[in-house]
Image (tube, rainbow, N blue to C red; front, side, top):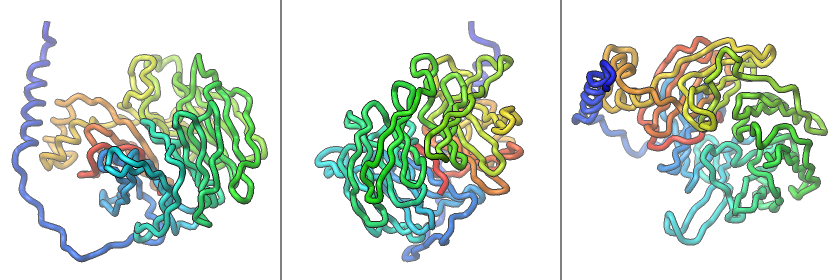
Length: 406
């Protein structure tokens, strides 16, 4: 039996979607011959947005919705890394001689952070791994000297690049462990399939100085952690499929594991964290943002319809933010419907809310919360403190991937 009201709802949704396909007025063409540059320091609300189909990383200003620039990155685009002094951008790239086939070249490109133009490149072994979340694909040592690129061919390893001397420093095997996270001036961390972590320390030339397996800090069979942690100072926060937060302290000589805590209380049974990039952290306030859904167990990559905000110090939830649906936002963009109006209100209620896949939070005193969907590609901007929807960044891309603060 058809549910009452289902047909009118679908009819309205179809009509609104069809309206979005009507011919739209052409926009004025951009002027030619003018080359823009970026300020020496990034704005407080800037964000890198990857696009796996356009093979680029675009930089946008969430405060205004302006598109500021882009850099190409080849196949499997990941987020750029920025040098501590802000002058250079490093990007691990993969290219094929025939576009999607032919001889493969992997490299780390070096770009000027103001012009976004390439100034150097360092070729690395053609082994760079590609995975759906794109988090942990590369990392920069805390002193800015070495970039590490996670390989999977299918054996796992790290390619180390000395970005100061523009040279390939070597490859370090990481058997049973994958991805890479910064863990000090000369140290990186990888996650291992047995519930441990691998700590790799470099010498002054970027070669392997030591490689130590930690004690097991999660149960890889009963409740594995996700590979999408967030960092606050010397501590990484990993979250498990069941919503258990695992603090990993990398500030000392030895890696230490803190007391675990839960995101989901018994009263919220049925909710779980998920998505391709499901955590964000506002370090100054100690607020942890988690993308949440009501998907079935095991659907840890399912998009989220809410963001829950936690105080890391008290480990208590302090806020719930309802997210707008990406389908409605996409149709509104195509039909040039402004957010907040009557038509926008109808769209949000007529079209299903399948949830958002990625979140990020800026680190200033008036932080913004970004929520992104890959298909359809939408990027929504919220006030991270009040949860109010501020704007949608339009014409952002085709298949959005990793979000990264500069």
